[in-house]
Length: 320
Image (cartoon, rainbow, N blue to C red):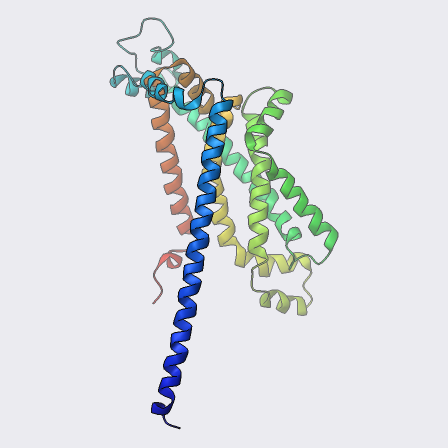
């Protein structure tokens, strides 16, 4: 039988495949449209219910949102820089809105650190310490929780449940609890962020461990290596780059979390930002938001640079 003899049969099979493909695509599009329509109807219904349940009626009060934003626009944009660097304002009338110079943190003689920079350093310190503590606790726990590294069922399940409990509650809830016990301040924030970081990193870490190549582990196990030696010489070299990447990502998240926790008494820049917004101090609020934005960008760039140094520049090159 020649190719010419089989060509009509091949064309017929091709048409059947194309028709089946078109039917499948049409069915998927129909399901997608139906799903989006259901989501849209549910969203509209929930918004209407929320608007009716709201005593102030959300949609009726929505135009006044811009009234609130107008309160936070500085009357003099030069006051933003004065507030950022604690320079005396020409509008200072003895009140708290323009008392920029009173926030100076004097270090030696006339040399001072601007108040907002000192608060931002506190926030960054909370994030750094919390990330380090969470990393150090999550690293050993993840090997116990990994299925391919721990064959005993009970320790593995208990460890996973502990990690789930640690990340189940938002940092702000944990911080509020410890602030009531330990009083307000950075200590409560460090404990709250550390606990949540341990749970979050623990899950990410043991998932990385469960996907490693087991051939090196089997090799050193065959020559008599114990459990710790298998982790040290087989698992850690494979997972360390990913561990560092996740830890640096968590550091960025913790900087934001530490800022939010400051609003509930965790210290740092968050508390000052909350007070500034609530009192309608436009220059101070703008200065704080600007400093926070620049800090997040710097932390992000530093994390990217450090990751390249740890993982190696070759990991970011195009593979041909």
